[in-house]
Image 1 (cartoon, rainbow, N blue to C red):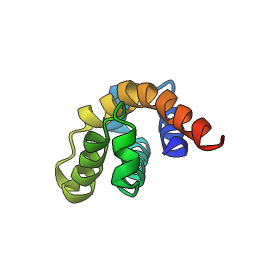
Image 2: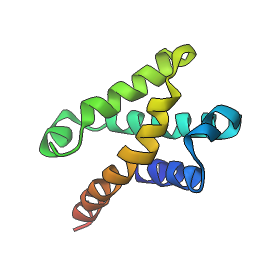
Image 3: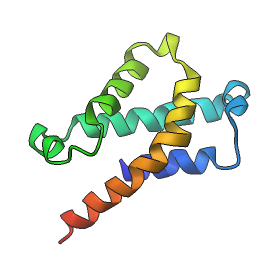
Image 4: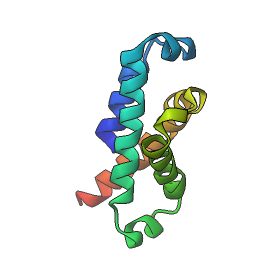
Length: 103
């Protein structure tokens, strides 16, 4: 999850919302990164997710499902908002979990 989130943020760096409409590679890359984050979240045990209530697991997993199953109707405003607003807030939480798992 961390790697996919960091990759999405790297792809989006210096870009803006309008770029998502004009750059096919950016659009596909951001959608794929968000899908990977959701897929990884869905593979965590229910116990792990419930032990970390500060992370919006249902929203993350729902986003993945929406992107995968309704790919013909993706709202790119939401994808951009997810990458530009939600991922920067999520990353510190994921890093904290990662550090705790190593101890």
